[in-house]
Length: 229
Ligand code: SF4
View 1 (spheres, rainbow, N blue to C red):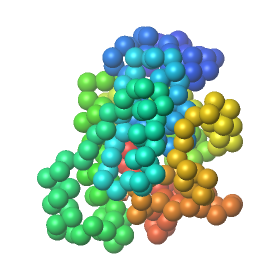
View 2 (view 1 turned 120 degrees about the vertical axis):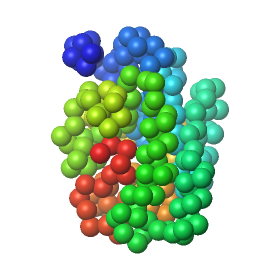
View 3 (view 1 turned 90 degrees about the horizontal axis):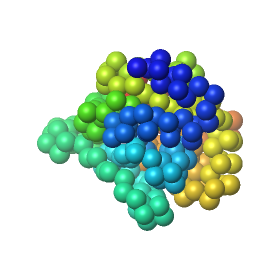
View 4 (view 1 turned 30 degrees about the horizontal axis):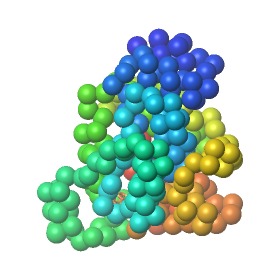
């Protein structure tokens, strides 16, 4: 199936490609939005064109208030809904009870455990029953992402992933958001380029790597939370 889709969307713009994919597999395409700048562009494509693609976001329970506000603003702006997926309350309570609220600072394993509970497991649940998972990944975001294909098979989740903005630069994204007046997180104007959970994200300084503000205490050049490993 992946080859057929690849041929269908060959030489198409991200917006056209999304339209074609939604038409080919109606009700089986989902988009996971973290409400970051790239994701807001994709949400704009989906909502503006009324595409048959469900949009969901994972509320890890540790998001910035600005991110939650943007979720509300986006739904109101487009008069559409974004499904909010939450972590399993039993495993989250157990984690905090046994290891405290900041166990992710103790070790990489501790961080991965928290990401698994608060993000990876809810993601798996949200992807179930679908054939294509749309993401806002861009190649220049990290070393790990530079080798990705815009359409690829995700063995972990048994689903085809589509990254429509893979080849866009950060400037492309910012210019597009500005030109279309797309709502975005005000933290982007304060030096936050990649925005995740509040205790694990900081603003970056000029010249720093794009992912330097994520889990900055870890010495690791392939920082991922497990969603896109
Ligand atoms: Fe937990 Fe931080 Fe991962 Fe969020 S980013 S799930 S707070 S470790």
